[in-house]
Image (cartoon, rainbow, N blue to C red; front, side, top):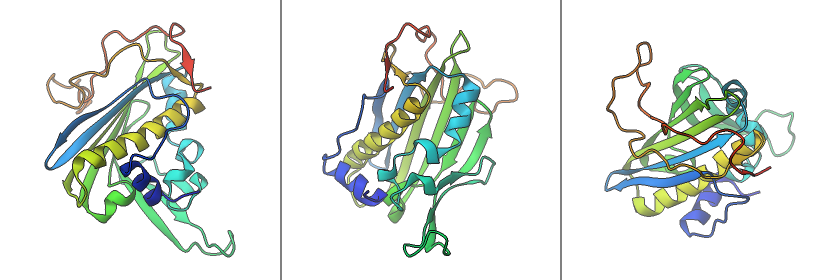
Length: 234
């Protein structure tokens, strides 16, 4: 298995081919001289509580090809403000020996069960440059209460030695794989039946009382009804 850095470099060379079906909706939402934004949206046949429980277990759905150790089992997420999305680098001589190191991928800055998880950090080899990123994952229940929309947005800014156009394409591909793997663990993603919200990530409507960022990622007003979309990724 190839470590995270090599995997992302392969995408920069446009050599990555994502396994399985594509997420329901995805796009590089913005590219500028100082950064970029990527978004992914899927709907899964699982309740928000079920989706939330799986989201907090990256070892079960993150792709091992996009880890430094080559094994997603070494990932963990501490679901509290200040908590670490981290990875252990095992001792190659013995799994029971003291690890040779560890990696902080991201740090939790906002968490609200079962609605929103926000973390900051530069994923993979992005951490080698003067970059930072904010990853927000929002869950929105369908009207039937049995399926859930997952909206992922990653905003990256700072100084990078590679052009942001190529970085955005690479990161979009890698995160697209991860959200598809998450959807697969939850029973598969509904086929695309609605577009990504154009205003996602933009400020605008006043937030709901008690939720300082309730409208930061507004979801589509009319998502498809559960059971009417084709399930992919099973």
